Structures are given as structure tokens and as C-alpha cells.
Length: 613
Ligand SMILES: Cc1ncc(C[n+]2csc(CCOP(=O)(O)OP(=O)(O)O)c2C)c(N)n1
Ligand SMILES: [Mg+2]
Image 1 (tube, protein in one colour):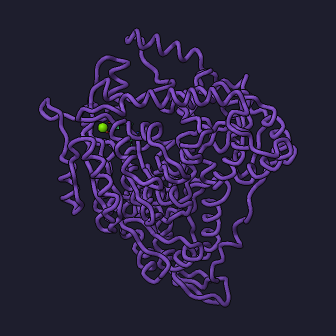
Image 2 (cartoon, helix red, strand yellow):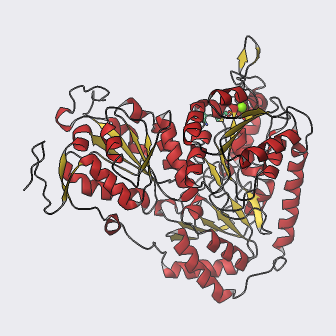
Image 3 (spheres, helix red, strand yellow):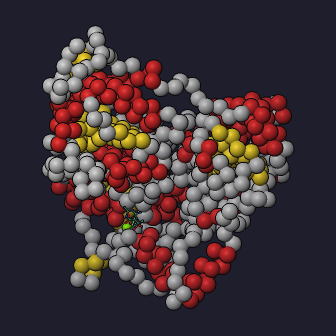
């Protein structure tokens, strides 16, 4: 039996002798993971070295580990395929936290390999080790933001750990998985059998109980005002076609959450709109008036539910809820569910459609339900409400007008990527998309700094598609260094910076509630401050353009998307209300102190109507 240099016996006979890092690459290749994304340091140089001998894996080097995670996240959201992220020990690992958390909250699969202390030196204050409470303690920082984490102690454990990590990241409710990989385990060798990941992971999909499906179908078929709420789970499960089939069979309007945007074509006659405080009046009015709601892969966040204020997005009860989720813990969490279907969205919707066909063999036509007239009316009202700010002719422009021009310049199949700030909410509500995985946003975590690196990942995943990164100036400045990533990888992302010289979404809130602001406008010596973004792009070797009017903006975006390379367009947007303010067709519980009397009064009125049980 072979003995590794660390004195461990490799149990397997007949395998090939490989270093731990080489085994990790073999495993990744066997799963089809095409990229290892990260920054080399002494804690993970062995992984990058092993990748040189792995023809299936190309390494990608962003300028910050947060971006490595966002890149992998954007890639997975655009394609459904996870990537591997790697960092050195200590600060590199800690730099990924925001990126991993963003992926975790939205159930995006990812494998993260952090370098770690040598197993034989754990706890001895190794450079960059966190060890005051426990040896090699980095993984505990990641505990709440990973679906599982591993810290193997022996090289022999690697096949088991890799298989478990892959299974945890990619099955059931998916998400990021951490493997904290000791430097010696990367370097030592042992005899390993060739990995066969498929044998360690379930095939097929989990299906809900058949009785429950029949009950759900009966209630839905009997509904006079049925509505479907599509969450991110529909996209993750590739269940969008089935969702559309059920919507058409029932004649049910479809509303989408942030994560669900794209699950249903936004020019479909049954599209009701987006829901939540930054959704649409039509979406909220439709879900609030439903008699039966079918929710699919949606966790009813406060953001998409208008903080549960009764009658704004939902009134459950009296509305009856039929809830489909892959995670049983989500059923009945925020609203009582008349029927809870636990299962993969595609499997559940396929079963539900078959059961519905017994009640409704043919799809309902528009107009078959009296409900449809109301849908067309609320939809037209919402589109008219957006038309005002989107027609604004002045310059600096409104974000609504900018989005109208950008949408007009972008082909239908364009991927649009956003992070926190006004662009995130306004793209959600005002920038129509037509296909799943074409709207990518840091949804549940609403992370600033996401847009640029995630768009880079999205473009790497979909080199066949135009990719737009629409960022606020604040969002962009958190990861501006990734212009270097676009340049080095020549990733054709068109970056649009909506520059209102501040964190205006927050400032708008401050003005509305407090009538005064603190720190949300960028200033230098009392004057508005902004870097010259077009110039910044040029400094990174990327064409930069400052848009001068709406027509110029439309032309510049079209040119950039067709250019085949990265480009940046800066758009000056209004900083002050009313032009800086987005439509907020709902309610969001943001506590205000009693010393702001009027705002406090409004806040208490809203809060008194919240339904939490
Ligand atoms: C990492 C992170 N820090 C802070 C916040 C809180 N936050 C949400 S939006 C926002 C301002 C965004 O500014 P910008 O990108 O310029 O967009 P704007 O609202 O000005 O259009 C901030 C600070 C956040 N979501 N994420
Ligand atoms: Mg801003």
C-alpha cells in the first residue's frame, strides 16, 4: 500500500497517484465545471498549479475575491452551471463573504475552495490563520452563508468531501459550499480512483405528494381570480415553460418577484407585473385581489410582499394560497398555505398541469374570465404611470428615460445585470425582459458592488448574448477595479453607469422621512463630486463615453453592444426629487423615530396593517 509523504496510507488500490490539488481539478473536470475563479496566494497556489494540467479548466483572475464570488454567481444565474472560486488563506477568504452571502440568499450554487493552515500546524498562529478561539477558524465565518462546509484533515478524505460538496451545492435547495483546504492536503499525494460524480448525486427531481397535487388542481381550476406568483425557484428549476402552460390553461395572470423576473415574458397578455414596494401597481393590485394564488419557488420576502401589509401585495387570507417550494421549511412560513406542494418546481408544475388538464382540457382564452378585463386595465394604468418619467426630455435625465433608451437599443435577448440602488428597483419594474436568466440581480441580499463582476460572469457564461451591466455610481464604485477583469478577459459587457452623484435611493428616503440628509450625496468642498467615469474606463483600456442626450445614449448603447468588446457609458441622472425618485407602488416597513412626527404617523399607519403570524 502506498504511503503519502504525510505518513498517511492511501487506501485505494489501482488508482492513479495524484496530489490533492490535482484530485480537486480532476473532480471539477468530471463535473464539467469550466472555470476556477480567484486570486492566487500561498494558501492556494497548489490549486492554480494543478489547474495548469487540467485542460477542461480555465482560470479567471478578478482583482478582488468578492468579485470572484460575484463572477461565479453571475455565471450560474446566467447558465445554471456552477463555477469554482478559490482564495488564499485569511484575508482572501474573508473577502469573499459578501459574494458568498449574496449567492446563498438566492440559492445560487457555487464551490468555494479557501486555502487553509497546514493540518499539522493548525492553531500555531500560521500567517493569516484565525485561531484565537478555534484552530483554522475561517469556515465558521462562512457557516451561516453556505449550505455546507468542509475542512478535511486527511488527504484520503478528498474523494468523499468533494462528492459531498458537489451534491450539497447542486441538489435540493442549491447554494454555495465551502471546502477549506489545508495547504498540505493540496500538496501531498495519494492514490485516487477517477472521480465519478454522477454516482454520488441523485438523478431525477423530487415530486410532491400526488393527493396534494389533485387538491391544488381542484382549487385552482375552480378559482375565478387565479394568479400565479413566480419566484426565483421557477428559473432555477428551468420550469418557465411549464409555468406558462399552466398560466395559459388557467387564464391566470402571472406576477413576478425580483428573482422571478424573466420567468414569464413581460409582453405576454397574462403578465400582471412585478410585485413589492418597487414592483408595479398592476402586479400588486392583481395579487392582492386574487381568490387563489399559486406561488412557485418564492419565499415571500418583506420586499416582494410589501412588508406583509394586508391588501397591498397580498391578502392571505381571504386569498387561498397554494405554495410550491423545494424547501419544506418555506411552506407556510410567511403566509398560511391551503395546500403546500414540496418538490422541484418543474416536477411539481408538470404534475399540476396534468391534474389541471382533467378540469381544463384546453387553455382559457383572454376574456374567458371576467378577471381579464381588470388585468388589462391595471396594466395600462401602470404603463401610463411610468410613461411620465420615461418621457422626460431634460438632461441630466431620469433613470426611467435612460432605461427606455437602453431597452430600445438592446436586442430582445440581452442579459441585464443590476445591483443595489435605484437601478436595481427600476430595472425590475421598468425594463421588460422576455426570457429566464436574462435578468440577473443581487436579489435577496441586494448587494452593492455586484453589477460589474456578476455581469462579467454572465458574459463568460453566455458569450452568444449581449450583456448590459446597469449600475448606480455607488454600486459601480464598490467594484470598479473589475474593469481590469473585463479588459483582460475581453468580456463584451456594456457597462452603463447611471450617475446621480450619490447614494440617491437612500437620500430619497432620508428626504421623504426626515426632510434632511446625512452623507448620501457625494461632495467635495461643498460641491457635487463625481469621478469622470468615461475617463476611468479609458484608464483601464476600455472605451468610455459620456452620454449627452437621450438620442446619443440610445446610439451609444447600441454601438457598444455591437462592438464585440467591453465599453462604458456614463449617463448623468437627476439627483433631486421629484426627478430622482422611483415609483414606489407599495409599502415597505422602514422604522422612523417619533421625533419625525409626520413620517412616524404614516409609518405607524402602515405597520398597524401588517399581517404577521
Ligand atoms: C454592500 C452594500 N452596502 C450598502 C447597501 C445599502 N444601499 C442600498 S442602495 C444604496 C445606494 C446605492 O447607490 P447607487 O448605486 O449610486 O444607486 P442610486 O440609489 O444612487 O441610484 C446603498 C448604500 C447595500 N445594499 N449594499
Ligand atoms: Mg447613485
